[in-house]
Length: 248
Length: 248
DNA sequence: TAGGGGAGCTTGTACAAACAAGCCAGCACT
DNA sequence: AGTGCTGGCTTGTTTGTACAAGCTCCCCTA
Image 1 (cartoon, protein in one colour):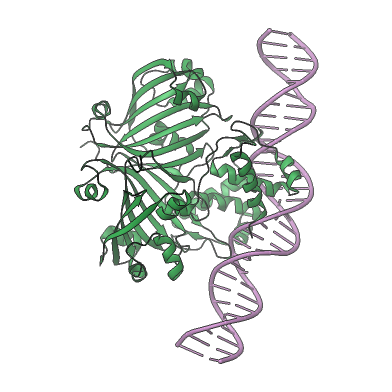
Image 2 (cartoon, chains in turn yellow, brown, purple, red):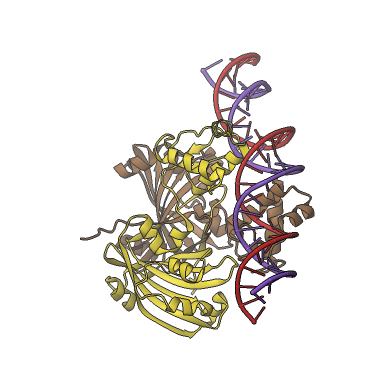
């Protein structure tokens, strides 16, 4: 059972995406929406707050809310899992484990994952038949057995782990930058050495905040891009200085 | 005057950042917090919701809330404005206009900005004395006069426009990918041609949803990275397929 | 005609109350 | 020892009310 405010939000979102409320137009007031849906104003506020968080609608005190855009943010799962993202968008995709082995954790991994042994997995994933992503993942030791049981061409590791051992990836932190393709990456992706790659490093944790994996994903340039919407009120994406050695 | 829930959120955030609530520990319950601050439960919920949105705290129905991390997300202004971000983090920075001219809008610009003439500005920005960013911005025609009045070494265009003509950058949409440095970019940034660059294209609008600028910013690899936190509930960053020509 | 002052509207904040949904520890039972 | 269940605890949802803050537009005035 979805909650009332989620259903109202979905209905409004459909109206926006369907052109009932064009970009730049004003949304109905909270009172109007409350009357239309026979809901309390607070419930309508929750619904609209979702759309604001998605970047679909702009809001500020005193002024009517305005439709900002048509595109829709997708779910955590789609950002987290290549397979779920690709499937939700109707792409043909695949994946293949290139190598996999247990080894002691490096100091950095030990700090991030809180364990002494990791399972290192190297995967290549493809989109529409083209290899687009090299994924180097270190799984925390306590998950190694479950990961090793997965088939080498497992489409979605996220879903497989959830189904097999009930492991849920709940929170993630992502760092995004650009790097140059090394010889190995270049061969796996079928690009020239030195080509630009879009790198997404991420650490994922369970509901309890327990780290599960630390991954370094490198996308072939032009294959994938990240999109973020924000507003003056709040936004989640942050710029950070890299490890440039200044003054050197 | 900041609101009650924002002050409560700030206090809780300080406690988390100060180690009163270590990573992995449980936050006090809503009832406890409500009692401590003599506030209604709803107000406390608003405060905690802020921390959840920042990715600092994890939350799910039935279970106590858990502290997830120590780092804090910054504001829209810091993502949007290089100057505000750099200043807030204590970096020495600078900027210089390389070229600037009015010209007719390309079809793409016309569609995005909704105008027929744009002001094209090429800027280079530096961090700690090193050039790190090439910024190619197309300002909508109606802002051209105000932008042209700015000094060539204007530190923060955002702040200057706000101060001079009350123009507020309220909403943004950003696309992030990696590209290869062309000859021009390479010379401006002092890197070799073909080096990887982190590209952030963005469109910015006013409160009313009126487009102000369309910008293509290219960061030298290693100088800057983007960070995003998300949870299974909601997240704002989205992966998109680029313009890879499939099956070619 | 240009500008200032409100009036009314709209969103934001805060409180209170009740119930629903989900988690977890401890208990009883096998 | 392990398993299943239950009751209490905690967060999520919904409604209702009241007031504050900020925006818009109209009208009045200079």
